[in-house]
Length: 183
Image (cartoon, rainbow, N blue to C red; front, top):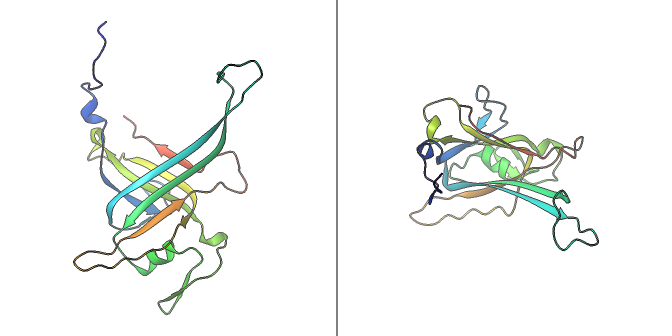
């Protein structure tokens, strides 16, 4: 058997994640996708940080197979939102409310968490199908500073950083999933 000197294969063109994707809140399924957030500018980023603890028994000179455990998990989805609507502003400001189109802040409560946020994208081998790649986060709040820059000859973009949270009834199931298209 010859050793490959690169990773390209006949399947490579069918395994590339392409284009911008779309973000939905309240995602359930392809048949019931929830609410489309709107157009973005500058891309979207899914970030998963899983901290693994190394258990160091006496006598070991380094890490030992089987002696690692998940210590913490953080899942975030960052979107640079181009469409500025009243609903999107309320999403960007947890705890905020609108009365007669005037938005004001308040404390965050359980109703401010978004049950699911999904980033839905295309893998090249599945273009034109209803079988996208779907990254979901559960129990999300938008974190970070709210910044709205309005510049001449440019469009305003608000950055929303959706942070997933564990369910208070289940502290073992990580609050994210990736569904890869089936063949």
